Image (cartoon, rainbow, N blue to C red):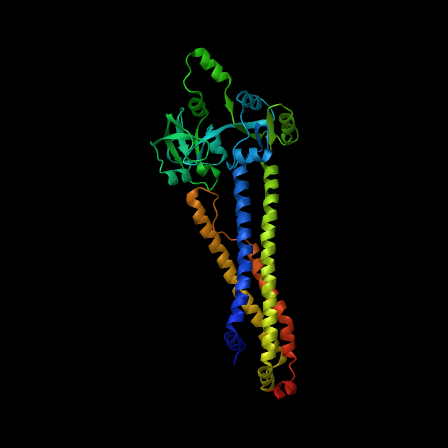
Amino acid sequence: MSTARLLLAYLRNRPLAALLTVMLVALGVATMTAATLVSSQTEARMTRDAAGVDLVVGAKGSPLQLVLAGVYHLDVPPGNVPHAALAELRSNRLVREAIPLSLGDSVEGFRIVGTEPAFLALHGARLARGEAFREPMQAIVGSRVARTTGLEVGARFVGTHGLAPGGPRHDDHLYTVSGVLAPTGGVIDRLVLTPLESVWQVHEGTPADDEERAILEAEREVTMVLVRYATPLAAATLPRAINASDRLQAASPALESARLFSLVGVGVDGVRAFAAVLLVAAGLSVFVALLQALSDRRRELALMRLLGAAPRRLFALLLLEGVAVTAVGAAVGVALGHAALEAAGRWLSPRGEWTLTGLDFVTMEVAYVLGAVALGALAALLPALRAAQTPLAGALADD
């Protein structure tokens, strides 16, 4: 009988022990796989969304909050800054480009962003239908916004104050959709873009006379400004100069993202540690099961020796049993991890949350599978050595 057939026969005789080991390995590998995929996709997404933005200039407060609100649109901004700050930044020789953002309203939970056409180029976005906004109260909607809300070219809608559904509505000011963006996979997919003048018009109302109009224009604000450096020297001097002012602060998306990754990394490392405990438990299960099986099989192994089986074949039989069980568990774990993440991504997708997919693959998964298989081989090593050294006379003499 071949070694493979003997292996299958032994596994069929101990289905519960084999199934327990497969489940422990599968849970450990699935947990590690899912955690790694979430971490890699999150890092890639945040890196892509922040590409091209060297600095975020906004009101005094938390730098991380400023970056989360202005780059990733996952938080509320700390406040507004004078519109005059935009002109000052654009006149600075260290600034290559300054793109203003005005935040505060939303439509069905999707943020309305007052900005300029340069914001589209910053994110590499292009129109799938319609045209770019040309005048106030026109809007371009991202692909996710269009898919979720049903807004299309020519549709009209009103903004809601704040991001939470059910806030005060600006019913007197209707936006008209002028275009729909093609999917990019980035943050712009879930934004509604409109000229800065739209935001001012909605919140200023209609001035009574020219004097009031002049006062309102002089007091206009923007929420923040996205800055691109004109020279590498700007990274050393510009943030310090901005932070020295009374009202403005500068936050680097690269630094704040790294800080955020370090915070998230603690949780990911904790999940991986838990998964490692599961894998160690699986290795102990393999070790105990094979030792117990070795005790039960002494006569069978002795008979195989008597019939001409070499010690190395007995060694290979026990070693392959440990490797086979953990290999099956690792394969099941990888599949389970991808399936769980894909299900989570599909569940989050209609809610406009962070996009996750189980269709990605990272090379670290190969290391997890090989590690699980190596653990199975290590756990089976001692039982395999003892099987190869099975004494003929003593084993056959046992009842």
